[in-house]
Image (cartoon, rainbow, N blue to C red; front, side, top):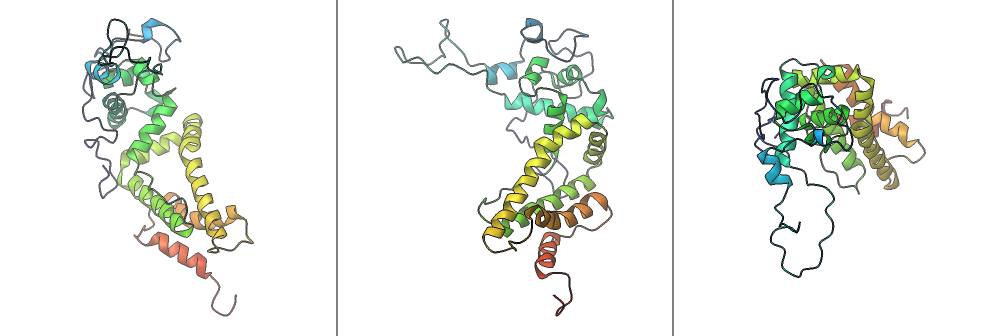
Length: 278
């Protein structure tokens, strides 16, 4: 749940889980997580050592009961074979505990570069295999942590042009407010930019799709006759997004009023030349 000041309320579990399984967040390093001490972060493929005993939360949420014949409990006798399972379903509680564990460690002053999967697993009270079932590496996990702390991307119609563009510009403004009001989120972004692999992962998973969505909105506005059709759409997109990025990223002391997106769109549509000189 996002507060008015942009801060994230971790007590409102975004993924539906509100209780961390196993060891509470913030548990000391020595707390057991079902992994051998000193074992490497990356789980060797196919080894049983990286599949520790699951916590009660994981067991109840991810492993439905089966009969001795391996058939899910409750299946009627003589029923046709069910479609083969494609792995265990995710546990919202376990996922919430992992994200909260990373945030708790960062709040305690741990740098991103110093966090290991083993440390995160111990803090979350889960096994390392539980983490690797959800994220392929630390970078992918950290990107989800940042997205969890940021305001949600707002829904757009997918059919409107300028209307969708305005919604996405407003989202840029609210994310800028969130970074200003959260010292932790601001610090995480500063650390991300000094780690090329992590920043590239964030760019590919978050920034690039957002930019593509903006470009598509510009194309829809051009097709609907709301914008000129004799200009490059990427240039038009930059003209709309540029002022918002300058205010939110390059000028952290600049005001971000509620009507900023509308003012940017109006200024561009009306033009900057004095009347009679266009």
